[in-house]
Image 1 (tube, rainbow, N blue to C red):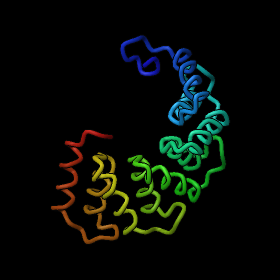
Image 2: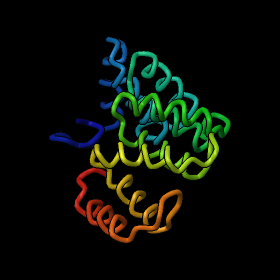
Image 3: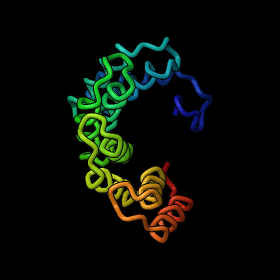
Image 4: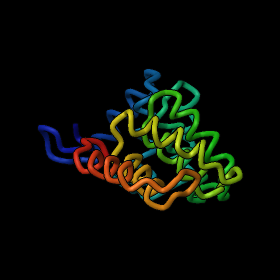
Amino acid sequence: MYQKGQGVPVEYAKALKWYRKGAAAGSAGAMSDIGMLYAMGRGVPVDYAEALKWWRKGAARGSGSAMYCIGVAYDSGRGVPLDYAKAMKWYRRGAALGVVAGMDNMGVLYRNGQGAPVDYAKAMKWFREGAAAGSRFAMQNLAAIYRSGDGVPENPQKAAKWAAAAAHATQP
């Protein structure tokens, strides 16, 4: 609540204090959230090494969000060397636990041939999973693929269908 200002003023130091208590009690979510505070520099200096330390702790305890964040680190080269194959590994693990952004990013990596050869069928699979979970981003990517004909026949009707769905999606 302190991190997002829900019912109280935004106070990152207090959020960190409570996340640390949760992490000490074994909360994987709290560990992931501590990592986010360090990655974003909220109440603490930006420190990707510290963020990764907490994300790895959270991932070891089963946090899909922490797994996704580790994937983002490898995908962007923040705190670790840029490595798309490792990003895919971590995105896949998060996606298996329902992290929709992990599904989206798997589709992007397969579409761009990052971490694996270009594979439009796998990109479509991941975008469809993300779209089924309500992801606007996945729907927009499906629309773009049908519009461009990347790996599928061009299909303006399907492109329009996915674009319209994206316009009404409730998740990013």
